Length: 272
Image (cartoon, rainbow, N blue to C red; front, side, top):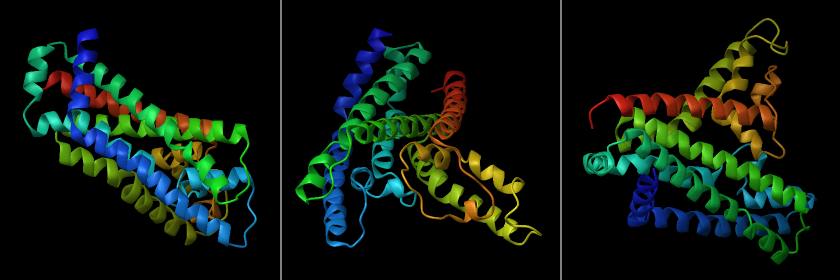
């Protein structure tokens, strides 16, 4: 197992896309965060220091509307952890060097998760200096810590889902498409189909029923870990109340575990 970890660390460091993705993530967090902070400083809205910090640190994702940029960029590292080797035919060399396939997968999961976790945790820190630079209210230590934890956990789970989807597809492009489309297009389409059906029902505001399924959309539920205040959504209007931080995190975790188990079963049983 130690050899597998060393192998994966070396492999990850030898891929230029790893450093490009990390650098791009931090650059966009600082750049877009600064633009958002400037916009807030020139506006008339009076937000608390914690709310301003959350918006700047997540580049708007804390409002529950745009996706978490950090997760989508760093999640590609999870896709590339297996995708690069399938794309370039290097998976056979990896399995020749480390015949124990379960060790290969475990090492990839550990190294990718630690790498992404560290970067995502660091990514929320510049927002403290950015808000101070534009004369915005200072956030509390608790708000910085809780948001950083939520962003980090969500990003790690998002990345592992990318790795699991790629293991299932055994193809880098397919894994990339699945990771980007499932949380954005698939969940959005399903959400609005359910909403439209419910709006034409006898009592759209009645609790329960079909909209309850919206609570279990994994990526949307997991987003509650970094969402600090949400704009009104059609789902809540028709009776679908989202999970809280804990429930949303558990929902996403269960989904990621299922994807990883299915991907691992396919990886362990199929030829390279």
